[in-house]
Amino acid sequence: MGRKVKVSGPQGKMEMECHPLITVGMRDDNKVVSVENAQPDDRKAKQLHGTMRALIANMVEGVSKGFERKLEIFGTGYNVKEQGGKLVFQIGFCHTVELKIPAGLKVNIDVPATRGNDVPARFSIQGSDKCVLGQFAANVRSIRPPEPYKGKGIRYADEHVRRKAGKAFASGA
Image (cartoon, rainbow, N blue to C red; front, side):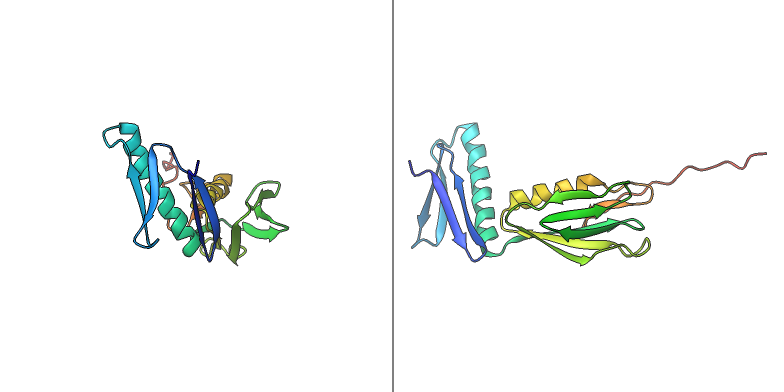
């Protein structure tokens, strides 16, 4: 019924099914995308209007510029490498952890291993689909989230970890 929104650009092609309450069209010689709400008084239609507008804006930005998420790994001896379409982590477990990289995403490893407690391992994930990129980054972070005492673990590059003081021992007599 023509309810699909298709976007293409230098980073690839994306398409999405549009909700029946929302009308999407082009104006001004295909330069402006218009998202219109057929029932402006309906609460669900208002919510869908904003959601569809944001999703279409993310699609347009994704196929034109793309998205990137940077992550860091803190902890002595922790490292990351890419092998055969998978990310392989050694992060303090007795085994390595492997995550399959979803189609359409690209991983760049800047610093493969940590150096002491000060220089973290750094890598970035790039792709055109913001939802897939964000979910994969969250899955990577959930392997070993940063802990509040020493700050070890996987975190986003712009994330600040609130640190706690350790146990205070009283001088016993």
